[in-house]
Image (cartoon, rainbow, N blue to C red; front, top):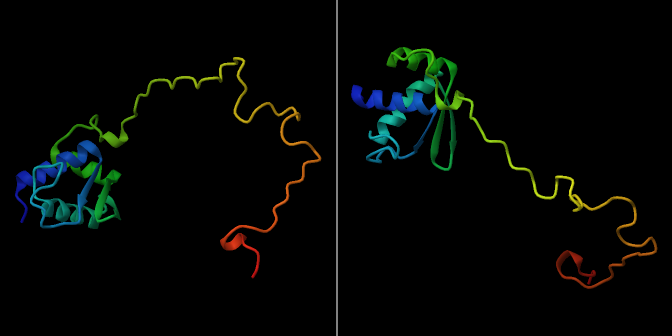
Length: 142
């Protein structure tokens, strides 16, 4: 059985971030982000997954859990949080306007790929030939 203090710590972290990862190592003494044993995190998330409160991805020996809307409602009720508080994954990020790319402000530099007026490239009479030589698949048949 998982102590209530550990359960609340995991629930608070999961609600605050909206996502949680855990290494597939039940013997790990402590989860890297939360001060509880990794086994407690794994078992709580296993329970949440069976109730469809989280979606799980597994890659490179790590479980990645993502809160669903039902999970958010459950945690909000369990932790006694108001509706205004939402996980970090649902918050809109405010980003500063991206700086303009150099050379794209109508200056005298040509854009990527050059001026496509037809006067660039190889002359019309140029015919490259690739004969013999090479190794592997490019080698002549022997």
